Image (cartoon, rainbow, N blue to C red; front, side, top):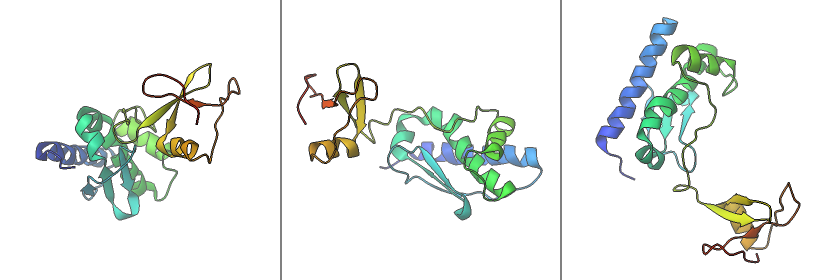
Length: 170
């Protein structure tokens, strides 16, 4: 997917802003990381600490630019800063959480809340007591007859729901 150049530049600028905040807070400089837009699937972004690289999902970015600039970019930069300051630590451990809250003034959430159906569709299944959403991988396992899933609440088997809204047999 081709990203709009201005959106690409906004992400680059936000990475620089976050690093500048971290530099002011810690009193030490940080080199700018390599920023790529090649993350795939449901993951919004990832930090490759030892490579000093950030990767962002271009599809999710295009649909959620503001969320990326306010939360996703600082989240990933915090991983790099934590690594630079403390070495290899738990990905969302105390060091990372401190950077998120004290340096960036953000709640240290470990997961984004973006709609990922465009990049990772879900399939609706019914058990009789509720609707369940299965990933493409699980859905395909059901279709091939390799797996059967059941509701953890009522114990009934999950049955695929056709787009028309009717239950089908797997």
